[in-house]
Image (cartoon, one colour):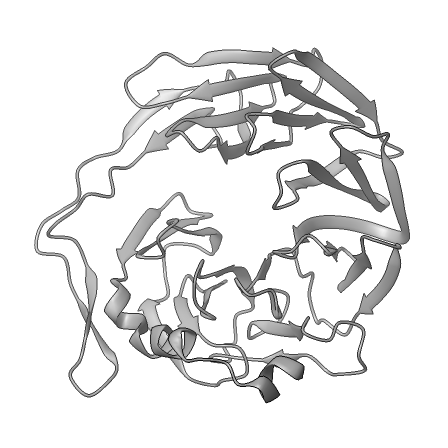
Length: 340
């Protein structure tokens, strides 16, 4: 939060709001029967908390404008992991092997069990993300992306412009950035091949791939925008999905198992939709500030959101709600479908 604190909310809320599948299809939103338990709050930084990442074991790593990198968990004192004197820590990320990466200005450091490695970028880091294999780090900055493999020298992928967001395809073959110039840019990691994706009315600063990697969903327009990555680079226009609002989409998050997109709008509304479909399910109405963060639980049965006005919330989404997608995922694939 802006005052340096980190809030922990217990999502075990048996009487909280939830979706229930309707007989014959669809779902109904059941309101909460009792208020949620108040969050636990821990002070991690002397100033603002600028970055937050889960380390996978119930703890979180944070970065702040006091130059410190902290590990926080409910019911325990914050632990300082590292410090960059005189710099703001604007981005943090945690790898599968326990690595912690943090960035301040042009400096990016990788904290490992055996010590700390550091590289310097050509411009200040704006966003960082690990490749799904957990070994290669992607760092967005003005002028492109720097890839930093754990056992190799940094590699630069250049493209003019200010790159502010970054996402990897699930198979690690592609890395994509959202740009201040109202566009996306992608690279084929193997050979550095470029992919230009433009035409946005706003900045696409939230990016998420569907779990099968065939669609990239983004913010930056009045509806979620989806790009086809089953055949990346093909001359195809993107597809919009869900409901069109007068307020732009500010954040997107793809379900971890099914082709379902959660979208947050500047009005405060949160919806679910599917790539290429106008259908949508309203999870939260307008108000409370624009969603600045959306995140699914690993099992896909909870969706959490945070807003610019300081609201934190989540909703239960039991697996039967996605029964149609579950059936489709279980359907055998024909030889014809495999070859296309």
